[in-house]
Length: 67
Image (cartoon, rainbow, N blue to C red; front, side, top):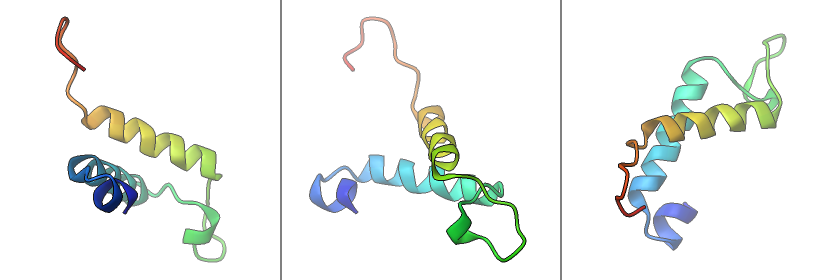
């Protein structure tokens, strides 16, 4: 919500939402998102996976292109 509504960064918000959804679909979840007895990961692990997924969505920078 911060990215989309407060900062006006809809594309970034979509990237984060998509990354989080993908991580969850792959079965990587924190303890608050699992049923009793299901495997879970700590927040740092799940967050790192989501950050990698966002980074993978970004097009590769071209040399000399503005960032």
